[in-house]
Image (cartoon, rainbow, N blue to C red; front, side, top):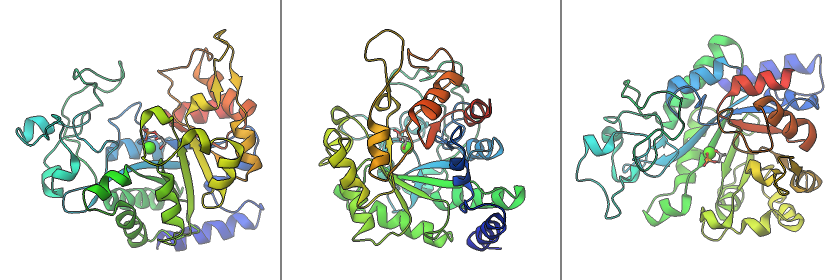
Length: 343
Ligand code: G3P
Ligand code: CA
């Protein structure tokens, strides 16, 4: 049974008892709930973007599972957070001498066959130490980089075998960088989604930090599914030509709403400790975005890296969902986010 047909059947069944049709979005019918989006999978427990991290996220009941996507040298979309391999693979060990002048190993310099020779590791910092203490050890355990097509097939398989549909949430990583390398990341990702059977009605949010690319995907490439504009800080230098200060003002949000369905701001753009008193301040961003007709899915909720204004993960989730009114949360711990929403 195709994914689209299966989802259609489930949607028809749901329509008989409730007016909310798209299955994962059903969470939005309850004001105490929001979508649980597994950030790089259940990355708080298993190395990010490995297929086991995606299996764990699915088993934990994530509504959506995220895929950050970059291209290999031979143009294959692979699931990796960084355009470089240094922080999450053993590239330096397997391919000594293949770094660029800046000392980094770029995924786009390696064919898929070469990328498949690497092992995924728990994320490290520049010193090679664990980025998050207490998570999965930084050891080789045979985990490899999945292609986007492999991951979509894997999720589709779990949707079938469990009878529960988890949506997908691919991110176009640094499309402008890919263009300077002579590659069209968005076109490759859209082709892979279509080949996997995902259509406009299926549970997919396609995201990017690059507003020019979001506009291009909607207009030039004619994408009909849901699009999410990620909002960073201008200082992060995420996407040339995208001004986040302007985009998160009411007029900027209205501009986003002409092409996209939601925004993905950083958590600190929604909840802040502006007064440095340990009490969360709620910014106007969620209200402004909703006034523009946009959903709001902030990143990243981490049980092992709490902001100063939250004494517990439960408190953080409740502040975001019940007080600020966000529609979804990107989280490294989908089980804990789900449990917090249930309490
Ligand atoms: O895409 C939402 C969130 O994942 C953005 O941050 O850097 O983890 O991709 P990043
Ligand atoms: Ca992401």
